[in-house]
Length: 437
Image (cartoon, rainbow, N blue to C red; front, side, top):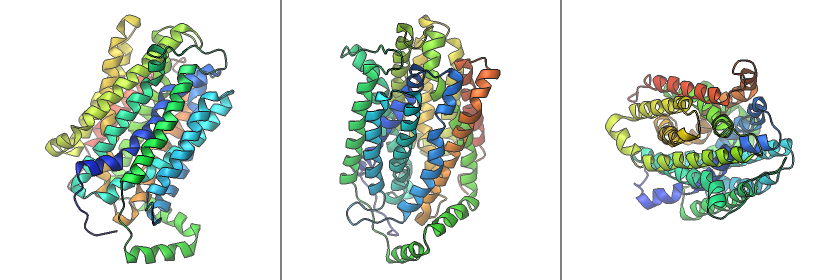
């Protein structure tokens, strides 16, 4: 890779980040709808965390491997990271088409496993793509642009079931063991959007070719086989820079808070606020409204992303992230104030505050991280960094069902509240970071 990088224009950064909008169609649809899909297929509340377990287990394996491989890939047409964007997008789109046609609970869980693996193949190199192509001064802008497109994609994806029902008169009622038509068509549109957005980035962006020294090093490593790659991943884990360790702990608390929201927010609205049961009109109304508030959250995410580089420059990335996490955590605590359908306007306020936090979570930790990483190993370190996203999800999936059953009496709202507390704790850990180190 070249030692000096040119300053990229706004539209060049736009093009290289556009594919993230498609990736977020995959994430947004599953986050807003999977728990309800599971309940429609017969899952009990305490079973839902375990049904999400496949996804983080896959991410734990896929992310560092894809990061390692993409560091060492060079295709004469597609470059270093873009082959992975394209392969992951094709596989993800196939899964999005199949998912709403699941006939059993375990079919849906299996497809989620494959879908998450495929999304990770696309997403992991996207983080390194920004660090590869942008100077250190532009990286905050690059990650903020990714947040913008993530928010935009998730806004549309989360609102699709509501749009199909209220604008296009597509049925939102499902029979026992079936998925409603509005959810099916949302997943089909998501498949097309995912693939189309990634293809746009693949063919409108370029990458810097590796230097002669990098090519020589890659040949030596390839001759050693995959065992050498495994050893390098292990070495990288034990030699993480100090700032990366601090950020990893913040991620370790932030993401279980998010997972608890994704696991239980939609069922909370549908069951505990609207008073419905799976298959009833009240449940469907609550599910659709929850999707609409997810959409509002993501509108805030992509709008607020435009302000993040300005705030980070004025107040520092650390303080910007701290304030955003505090707002998001307290937002989730406010769900306890929503007691009936007459209070549902508060759900938009709650998810708006979460949207501010989400915008920062998608950009500030990565912007703070890349400045302390060796340039020729950004992909592998990005993969390792995501350990601290998937490990807490694994723990939540394995153990939170028991907590729901024995300590929370199945209260979905209590689970969302715990998520808010974890995010607030993560905010205070942010203050430990010394950005000038």
